[in-house]
Length: 164
Image 1 (cartoon, rainbow, N blue to C red):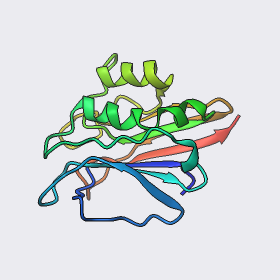
Image 2 (image 1 turned 90 degrees about the vertical axis):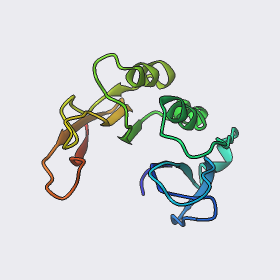
Image 3 (image 1 turned 135 degrees about the vertical axis):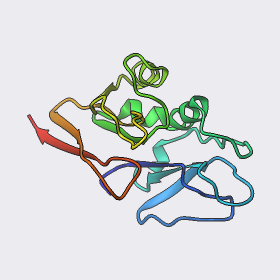
Image 4 (image 1 turned 135 degrees about the horizontal axis):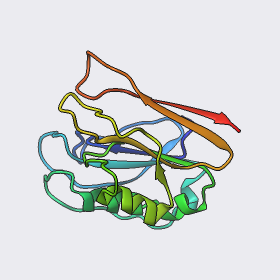
């Protein structure tokens, strides 16, 4: 709840469903008709920040896999706010391999001046590195590690942020 922007990727949402996150307003979502599936993106913004975000884009598409273009469009919706923020963490299951120099990593660096804080270790039982933490933090030390989970296909990421 300390975040100003929350993006739910792969949220299994359809158009007629609404989600209530206290103190947040939904600012955009891509349109997904029909039954819930592992697709979809919804952006929420803290009510105190929402008036500063001017560009609202609705990504109109049918059911499709989450492409890098869709992820880029979703993040670019809130680019102005990210650019204004001193400290930013962008984390999640990106569904794109985070190998050194990957298209996603280059996009995050070029668009938001963020770097990958999480280790390049397998984050899923399928041995893929698709879960990550990108950030631009100046006055803090960010520590990210992965631990084993027997209850999930994805291994949890633990993030510790300490003042310098």
